[in-house]
Length: 166
Image (tube, rainbow, N blue to C red):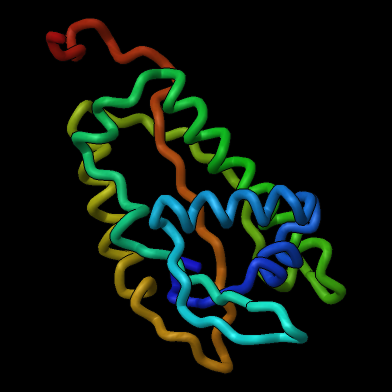
């Protein structure tokens, strides 16, 4: 929904078939009550009110100060949630009748790179330069939405001489 799409809870249920409808409805209610989702439209359908929700992008961004306050357990939960969403989206893609990972150039690679203390910022800046123009692409008949989920974290301790004082 980060592209401005408006979806009903039923449409969200269809996108996440592994989750029970009750769980999706509970989560949508919670996200709406917290202001992360907002009602974009309401329509009467067979006597019931069908709500179309929109993601409030201003409420989903987490600034550097908030990230610095997270505990290791908070980071574990955030990462686990991200991975669960990624798995659900990938399963929904594979469950489509005409999914074709080879033709769709599906990628699931990991690359271990060696970076100095300053180089992650350079890498992130490079990725932003490449990604930001594409994030501005508007929906069009020839464009399918693709999910790109980069993660970055050290897999080994840096040499003690380069470790900053804490």
